[in-house]
Length: 116
Image 1 (cartoon, helix red, strand yellow):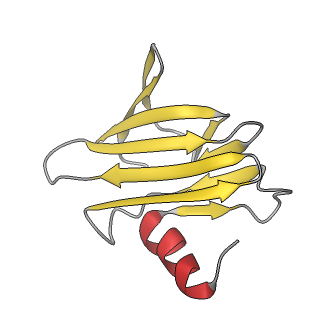
Image 2 (cartoon, rainbow, N blue to C red):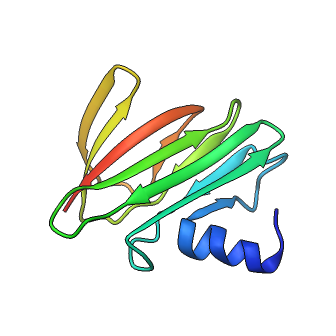
């Protein structure tokens, strides 16, 4: 996917990687690394389009996570289990308490608000 130094920033700080079972980057993993920084923004051009993840966490407030999943791509979003998720996609809003280890998303642009 990228060189080793870039890989460190994409994965360890930004929280974006191609899954090990991916073919042509058709399966991505998004995992914001809230413990490494207060905010980060990464994007990666795949053969299917732009994959992007940006997030911002302010102590005492909801963390905001913006996710872009390219066309014909599936994504696993790994988030801290103790957080409530407010999920917005276009005109749809869903509030959910996380019980699974990952949110499974398809192509689209998402805004997640995570409430501790």
